[in-house]
Length: 270
Image (tube, rainbow, N blue to C red):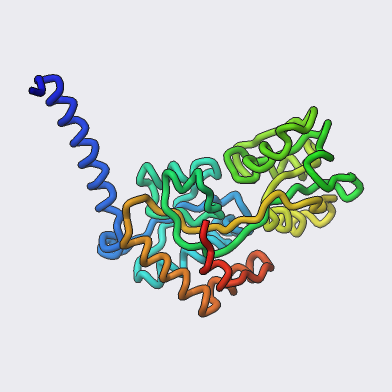
């Protein structure tokens, strides 16, 4: 027999579960269409994926991808600006319906969120002044390296230098702050995504920053909450369609100057 205290505990658990299910129901595909609004979390400090133009309007490859998705859904787009380390948290706390923000598909993230098939791919690299003799993690011995906290760049750098002596990994809270540390000369070695390094060099032509080696290449997907098969099926079909018709390929080429392979992304299995 369950006592009064046990009944209260069960009731509390059911209330939490019910609240979670209601929150999910409020953000499913049908409700998004009914409300005529799609909330997408995008890091605006991660050019050229997401940034603000001279009129403080969101632009970038992820912004344009979200705009295309909202247009095809027939709803308005609300860009939810989010710091890099908080992208998944914004989704789980129902402050956004989706994350389209250079979010790599990893086993760790799959434990807490679901992903569409990849809509693009990304390389994470280590860059430094051209004269520096760096071609592997081992060459970072005795060096200071800048990286943004909580990113896959941080993850692979940390793993890579685990057994390398005297490496100081300096972590910043967002890409904008990390990039400022490089452009100001505070630090010289940068572990980041290839598009961000390319963008940084374009906006700072005198910056002495060359790609030294690739840490990892990985696919990036649209993140959604788990247990929403209808929305995932829609997103998978949407990504497949817009890879094959070239729209997503054109967006990535426009902003990243990289040509992605649609069939390679469509066939991806982690």
